Each structure stands twice: as C-alpha cells, then as structure tokens.
Amino acid sequence: MTYQDLTNRIEEIRKSVSTIEGWLSDAAGETLYRLARYIPIPTVVELGSWKGRSTSWLGFGIKDRGEGQVYSVDQWKGSGSEEHFLQQFIGQYSENQLFEEFSNNIIKHGLQNIVTPIQSDTIEASRKWDHNKDIGLLFIDASHDYNLVKKDFEFWSPMVKSGGYIVFDDVPSWPGPTQLVSELPKYYNHIATHSNIAVFQKI
Image (cartoon, rainbow, N blue to C red; front, side, top):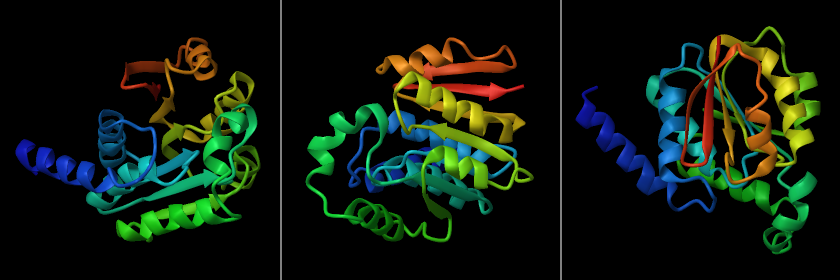
C-alpha cells in the first residue's frame, strides 16, 4: 500500500466513523488505526467502548491487516466516578439500548467478525482472560478515576507482550489517567501524547 493509498483509506474510515457518537478525535482514531494495523501481535483489548467509535477505528486496523481480533470490554451502563457525568447521556436509554447501539454500529461497519464484545466489569474480565493470550495493544478508556484507571493498568498490563503498546485516553483532559501516566515504570517507553491520548510501548 502506498502512502497515498493509506491516506485515502484513513479518510474513508474517518467519514464512516464520524456517524458514531463519541468523544474520540479523528487524529486519535488514526493513531489507534495505525497501531492496530501494524502492531506485531494483532490482539487488541479495549477497556471502555461506549457506542463503538474507537472500537471501529481499531477494528478497521485489524480488518485491513487481514488477521487478529479486537476485544471490547464494557458494561455499557457507565461506571465509577463518571456516573454523574454520563447520567445526562445514560438517562435517555432503556436497558441494553447502549449495547444494542454499539452492536448495530459494529455490524453497520462490517466488523462483527473482528470485534468481540465482553459485557463485563474490566477487572472481572481480566480475571477471565486467557493469560496465555498475549495482547499487542491495550486501549484504556473505562473509568477516569485515578484508582480505577490504576487497577485497569495493573490487572491488564501484564498480558501486554514486550514490544506491544498501551494507549491511555483522556490525557491530559482528566486528572486520573494523566497522573497515572506520569508514574509508569521505566520499562514503558513514552512514544507520544497528542489529541488527548498518551501512547506507551512496553519494553
């Protein structure tokens, strides 16, 4: 694929994903796409999915490389410190409606064979994860509370293979994840912080 082909493909995805409600910027989405497409191990875990905007960027990356899977972990109910923040959104929805909208968006974009939803608390999901299955990319975007983000990191990061990536959303816009990324061990190499995400590679 030429540089122009890749540019055209990203623009095509941007237009498609723009129909999905969410807070992820196009620039952040492009980063997720590129990581998912080129990481050594094509296994992606996403903590926090909402309606599937970031999921779709990740899913297209895996789809375009021709192998791999995206595992999206969410309760689709809102959780932790942002329950109040999300109440204005959640209050509009009947039970299971958020998950149905997520599923419909995934199907609409032809990613139903790429994306595996895990309707669960993130910590419980980590306990059930096959620890022999290495993760190439971990995207942390569930709770924004410092202690809860830290738990997500502590429970999931051991499954990320050396050379793999961890991306934190909402850095620097939320203090919780922003504080945590400043405390990461030295064997996590800071690659970039831009478009409200922070990218680290596990050495």
